Length: 393
Image (cartoon, rainbow, N blue to C red; front, side, top):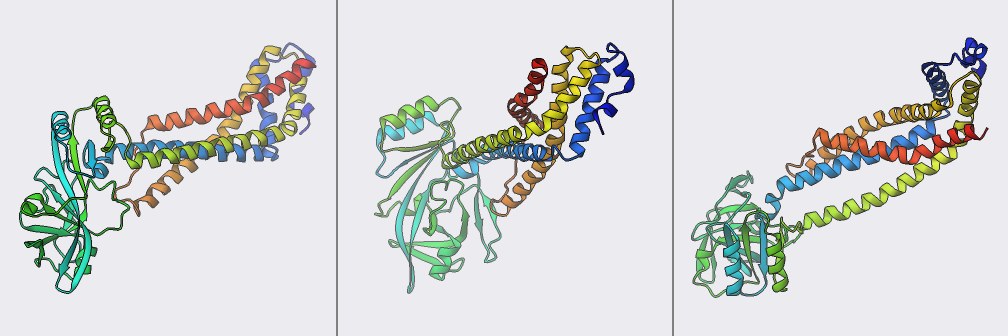
């Protein structure tokens, strides 16, 4: 359709009859016809890819952060973990007792367990009666490994073995192992320890007993650990304690220094760099397409000005064009991002038990606001070219 056909004939007769509504209608009609002719498909595709990435990364980031915040108790097992690879000092135990509302002490030993001719090295964790502080221990009392949760460790004279360790020793439930002359009955299979965040990637086979079962032994622990529950606002005291005892390893929710937080922070840094790259590529595509797209619009605006449209309407035309392009690229991107986020959540559930993305409508609104702000930042210069070209004429 030619420009003369686009502008109503009665507008060309009277230069003062072009109302703002008529001007917007004519301008948007020409823009829509250019879109249908395929002149904006590359721009829309580039913006759609940008918006999908921004929305998806924003929704995933907010969802994963809330998931970690709500499920940290299942990976840390306490508000704070304090670990030393030597005997405890009295001052350290006093600090733990003073600053915690409840605490649990444990020791870990490197031992070799034997069952007749079968021998296997393992990590033996000896826990007190307060363990676990947060979360549940998952055990099984059947060969089918049907998990059941408990909030109490092994009893006196009992030992829990990982299924791998039980298989390596050819041990059945109810059998008895002897450790340093102390008989220990295998009463359950150990499936999950809520505080095993540091050893989560280790390959060592593990077992758990009560500290009371080893009270008469002469084993030397290779590490000692304290689990603490405490009030919020203790970060300054924890930092001071850590700085005064460099050999003490402290992992705390208050310090946000648990390993999963560090891993996710690295992922966010990578996503930020990728966002910058995608934004730069989108800006390049918009700049390359601007000449082909803006020239017909300049002619349309020139005709409207010749027909009596006031120049103060030019910013409104540019905003209208930008809003149309934004809507046509943002709505499909939003649908794709939502579908992709649910797909990622479903896929992650096969690797992380109980994984779910926790985000609210405020997160969606924040993601849309971010995408809109990025669009106007990178697309506004292109539409200002339209205004500048008209003012120069």
